[in-house]
Length: 267
Image (cartoon, rainbow, N blue to C red):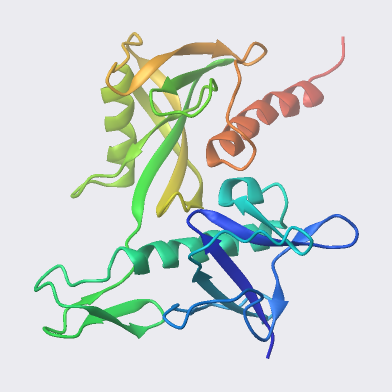
């Protein structure tokens, strides 16, 4: 049986370039590159068409540029189909989880794979599964203005949306309101769920919302945010790239005004 081989060197993914210049994931019965005897091969849920999926980590960068290309997972979004990129993210998360759960957090003994997505301690029997870091992200709007912020940890000059991790003991809605209040000093209302997105950098789940400004003046939390404020929809700064949920929410909000203009009667 042939498998799609999602092979990583650290955070770089092995791609195969086709004759037409497009990229794909290698499909073969055996790994397309040499692997060590100790290499762990993970079986992943198949593609929607039933194609088998395997993933593994390698110790050396692949230099055979006639057949393959190494590409960061983030950049692979622009080279692979959405289905392959999404599966690559899942594969990376499993490899990351495997690497960071080699030993039991209870007794320190080695962990061993028990199922495709669980491990069991060889000494005390403690079991672990891949853990997701759940985070919310929210577009706050005020008429034709949107709240955009530049976080201190952003790699680039773009402005994005308020976001943060969900804490223990709180709902998603509570997390949204808390993050907006903590980071900007604003109160919001009319919270609306938008959608979610796996964020395998390295193991997140982003849950998106839209909200309406209620009250307050922007007072940025300087420890988290370098700059930010209200921006008119026609005069936006640089915004996040297409692969992010933040960009999808912003584009959705902008499209709402296109719908309004197309439905309004001509003068």
